[in-house]
Image 1: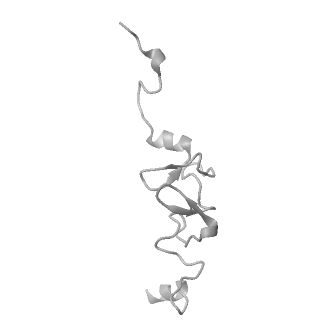
Image 2: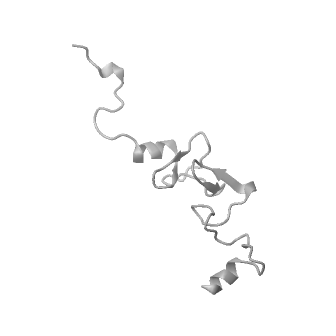
Image 3: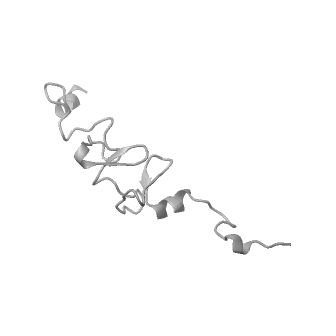
Length: 99
């Protein structure tokens, strides 16, 4: 759509600061500049978009987990959604019996 091109790009072909970019932030789609970037394992995000997909908690390098769906999660939400499920997990060595 040529109308979309005119709205998102200047006459010399450079994208406007507010233009959505194919390699922009995965959450909002806009271009990410160096001053505002946060980096996960595989993608670059805006600081304002760098929050847990489930609980919307702000993330940093200590509590960040990349989900298999390409989104980012805090430790608790990642464990709840993608961690081990079922009986027998988390019992530890104290539950083992020697016969």
